[in-house]
Length: 256
Image 1 (cartoon, helix red, strand yellow):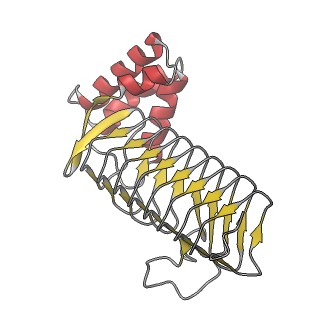
Image 2: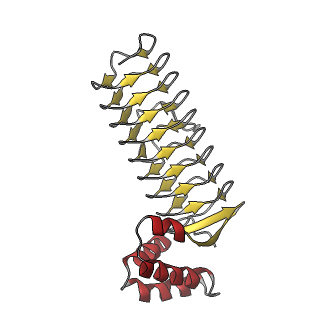
Image 3: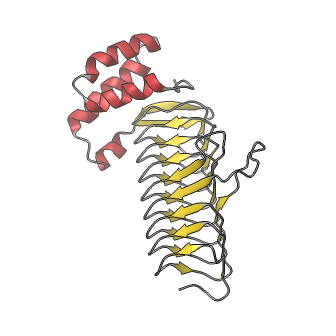
């Protein structure tokens, strides 16, 4: 399953059933679990752990040193889960000692061509990165987020679950869950209602979230006043509670 023209370091730990294509280079301290397919011309350096049943296409660079001037060769890591599709020319960097030391990509993600996931990013499950989406360092992305092509996310931003970004969005503040955002700089454009329907949210839950959106973005209330109103509704809705908790925990401030 390893092409004779691939170069695999003897210290790499490659499970049975892993396929590695021609001219790919697998460095030391790389672990690849069973069922993963690595195409031709892929470079994977470590310390990097890649889970089961992933597909990594040609010219991807996985687990390379972070693009950070402060990086001084510390043994930081990249951890990739299961069932991810990583398309052509994607770059995913290891972490830095200035953060947790690890970049993480969860399970069931689709990372399209030319996307970049920088050092110390934490990406959840079932996300979609359309072509040329770029995350700067230290970005946190929750589950079921869909990034439109050429979306740019500033360092240290957090993107809440079930968000949708339009193509070319430039994001410099935290994006609360459930939102659609667009623009340069990105602004909210309503609830991601269609995405929520596809993920099985009930009509009642969507209606409650729509009301929460109106309180935050359409009521002319201050952020403090809006969060107070949302606190009253959060007791009866776990979706609004997550929405409110995200807003309260924001360090960079939310888009408004």
